[in-house]
Length: 300
Image 1 (cartoon, rainbow, N blue to C red):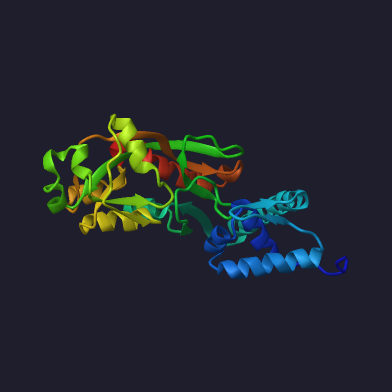
Image 2: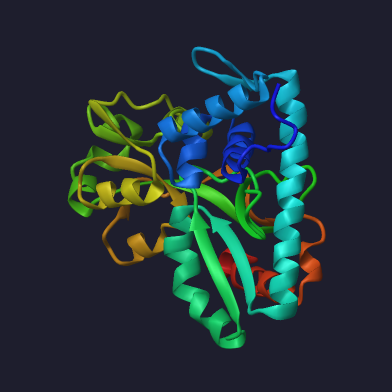
């Protein structure tokens, strides 16, 4: 039994909270910018300190035990309240700070090129921009605002629908010229580029256009849309690309469409935050700016 006069370190508790949210030591490590072994070590030490097993470690999955689930919910609320109180102090005694978390490709292609206009509007407000690999489907606890991709069903969050997410097939110009008649059969034997987090994209695309999936000669996988787009532009293969995020690559001529179809995914980009965050004037103004900049496809 732990000494009642001692408490686990704040670092260990934060590592546990993030691991409980992700249910993955690897993903928690990426979020916290530490190694997976460091996460595992912190969790093991915390469990030994408490004398309680917090996770059930399975072959390909991680689950919270009943005690772990209870502790996680408490800590998750505690950290949210701690962060809210910290920002209250910033609002009253320091410079304003807005923390926004977005997908990397969204940040590079859309947000960063336009961020100067917000800085000019609110020069006294600082911004901390973070990115997380893979599609953003959950609102990080450490963020005030986030850009999420999905169908808008996030319990406990306030969300604003921005623009529709679609996909197109693209590649380098010289490669497109080699695909006979630009038919689906022309993709057979080609190198296909795939996003690691969406391995069934080609099958889903084929079903949407009423064709059989292409028979790949080789598959190259990437864990980021930025890498995927750059690989396609360098002629490494044919890729399914996020639209309209990748529009600049096509308008510059670095990429061309293999087929004209824009396939809808049923998903939209959303701006999301926890209830109460919009009570802050700086956050409200940033929300208004985001919605004005990215509220419709025509503005992208």
